[in-house]
Image 1 (cartoon, rainbow, N blue to C red):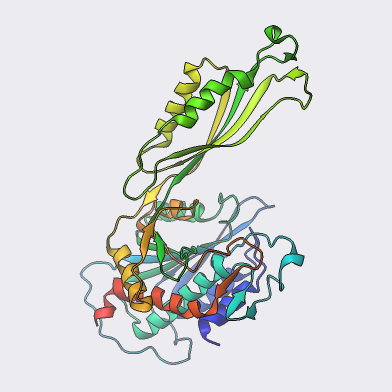
Image 2: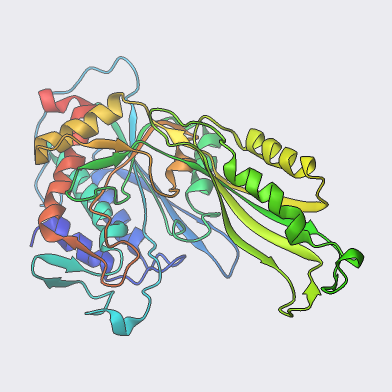
Length: 404
């Protein structure tokens, strides 16, 4: 069994359902500390939802390699300025298992069948974490004084509310003046083959809860009541038909969707007194939360509705245009798999939205995502070592050692 697979199985065996880290970060810190990483645990959140975060940064080689041998000699690279920092980011928490009876094996007992490794977190994203750690181990064994600073940012609150995880660490890093140049988030981004897609951005998300006020009354006497459903219908039609923007070369157009709508008491002879509508914007970099709110509220005002409206912005869009990091990741994927990877901004949100506030280049790359959050989540065993090799290849390209 190779070391990447071994660490993957060790992490899968920990039942780290949000926000419980279940010692995953300790396992990783124990691998990083001997390499010369300074590991800091940052605990956040209320007593009933304690979140564990790990910030680990390479400070210099302080021990032997994992194999117990001295690090290989390498030509030192003259540094005229501080090296840039690459952060490997991810989450140790997983979603709940769902009905255990529907799993073919215990979700927290790594199981192999027909070349596939099963277990909760196998794809999302413990394989990525293991591959990142082993890639760094191998890279530093060959280049103990790289012209590149390396860090890890891990949380146990990505699959949950995400209030006390990566966002907390990023705020602390910003307050300290920590400079981050590149970040790879180990989200499962591949579709059909490892490396066929990476995410170089994500749309923003903003939700609203709208309460349209009416007057409750007997359905046989509509002139004595005011039906909020009827009042809102023309506004709803206009909102559905609105073009919020046209998107751009990296993002599709902004989308507005109703997720829940409710009015009435359940009785068939009562006009409801209010209508409650939950909706969401998934928006691109062509729009801002402020302009979207203003435009939507203008529609409501134009239809003279009596309403209450609350907003929650879950995350802003971020975009990494092709540059050093994208080039390094694409080059490493091509070298390992022969694939020319596609750039994409599809899907939901990720912790990349927080990291992008303190890091100018953020991409997401990991294994095939077809089974994430599903019963019998899995990853191809044959993809685990290539994933590690790609992460190592990115390190080599950003440090300039691929040309050494």
